[in-house]
Image 1 (cartoon, rainbow, N blue to C red):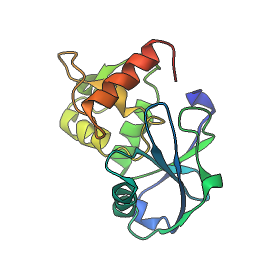
Image 2: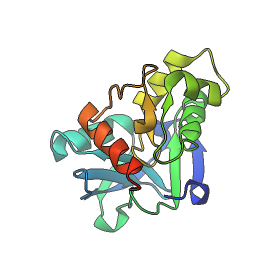
Image 3: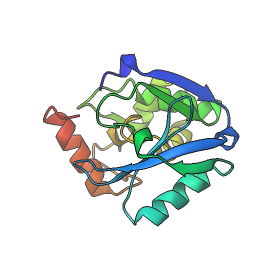
Length: 173
């Protein structure tokens, strides 16, 4: 995925997004729920506990959005996504945009990520932003590891995180 080609649109509050079109798509790593507004991809999350739970997560993250299923709105999160719409606090958007700079097959620690984002003392807050990333894989939160080099946690499971990293290192994604 060519991160330099992605257009990034930002807003302060996910609650301000009024309508989302969503689709479930298959990937080599399992099913993914994607959701787009009229600007771009707002959400991409793995379906690990059923579609109902995935939709509940989407509703929680975008509480005021009207949801409409639309298979044509499916984003290719492992291919070419043209634009993303990241909604969150200025701090979180900064961390998520910094994640886009971590190259495929590379990893950084939470401390390194915080330093790259210009907030070297905010390691815990950076970790919290990573954990709340709404656009999995495209905003590559799986590339952040613990300071001892171990994989660490991932919202959709440590095993999936390990598989994503191994795949990227083998020249995938």
